[in-house]
Length: 539
Image 1 (cartoon, rainbow, N blue to C red):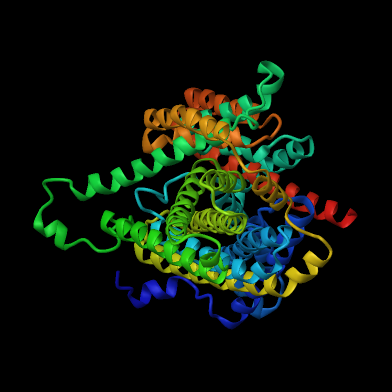
Image 2 (cartoon, rainbow, N blue to C red):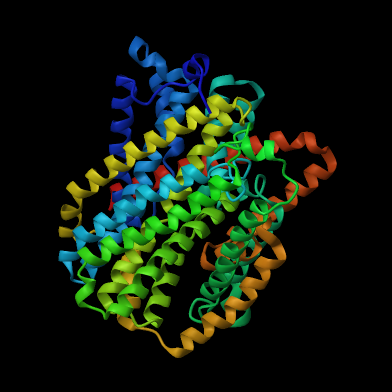
């Protein structure tokens, strides 16, 4: 779409000198925070809200150069920067390179970093290309993105909206203090009711499987099997969406000729989506080849196994990205660690050697987090830019966010490159890396394969029943993979409250519920962030 001068004037550029300096500074802060908390506590905090708050505070400093940060669009770029750097450094880079270190193969750290970095940049690029498509619509829930947008809008407009957001944030902080997952409670007010009901049910079943049924679902690989079945069927459904639209009859020649990469309302057309998905798989295949060659796998495997490794690694990364993205869009949670573990288990069953398995799980783990986080950030921008009401503004703003994210990922890469030796020298590594390496050392058996196949069947059936819009199989499996005490009760109680309020008050209650939900999620994120910082300081 061609931009006119008026459209260009509506959205600021990331390359404004003061803004660029502030965004790079925030990216460095986010990367360091992400690395510190991932190695000390095993988690990555949601720093998007923090970035937005910092931008708001800077905008109120009585210095002319800082007045530009009163703009909601510049605040959006700043929260995009710190959020991208946090997830990029901790999830997409540090976790992958920690695996060869734990395996006692330090010579593979740099090759793994190269492969993980390429996967991270590709990950975010694909989400940028797929955002507002039928697969990943801008109208999707993307709950953390909604929370950040509502916080920025409330601070800008004040009034009833800010009061509701403040009450929600206070409730989120109090609930989080008492150990309740208030982000899950907030998500229940925003997301698809069917998908979240299955998510909450999965959480409950995982929590009570041992006390009620004397069954450890994790040991029996039930969650993993469900996710394999649901994930594979989700890929089939995605493919069907594309080809169904592509082969749709009755479209006039004029309509076909008028198709570009974006529709008038900013929605990606099916041809663009198909090209992006195809490009994604080929790009992952190329990255897998680069990683395998510089990682020395040519001397570790036969030529046939080497080719199969490349194809499986590319497909696994591709599926990992889609599954994590779908879960993130609907629930605000993404089981990146668990889905990477599934990839590893399958790789073990296929007989890949240990070094190949280490590179495989690192490559898989590098995809997904940047994809999901970019979705959250673009959702924030989409709301702040008027929910697509001005397509030119939306496309320009989205592009600026993408550039901002790429700069932040570059900062994250440099930060990890300069700091990882110091972390590893003090034996500071992501805890999940120990799980991955233990899995490689333990190997797998025919019984594991049997369990995975057995439980993949109901996972696939559930996904078929729900269809591509509800994603029942993937969301139920996401719940099964996450052990979070009482989160299931929180999700289901939130859904019940939402249903009752809408029944009594009608559709006009949706907006207030959404603002309250944003407050709950923001409060939970703020408490989690500062609580993590305090815990780290004590350690």
